[in-house]
Length: 102
Image 1 (spheres, rainbow, N blue to C red):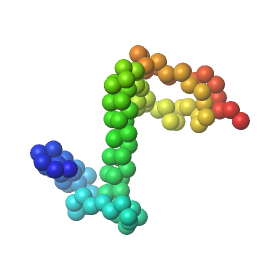
Image 2 (image 1 turned 90 degrees about the vertical axis):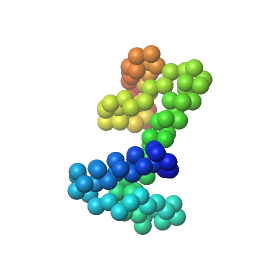
Image 3 (image 1 turned 90 degrees about the horizontal axis):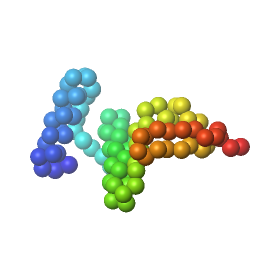
């Protein structure tokens, strides 16, 4: 990141590094050598990719005027893979209609 937002984020990284005693040597990322990155930078990259996906879903649904439900607390541990669900875009309620099909 560049500009004022980049400065703010870098300061936040440094502060968190000191607070949680995690070594911080700056933000480094090489797409060609993912496994060569240190665990902290790999975690930041993964978190950033997930956040971008959530933001994209919310922005696109807003532009189409359709509801978007993201970050349903506990959904990945409570709903089995392959289940059929109904999601209410108004309330955010998630209902499991059927378990995984075999």
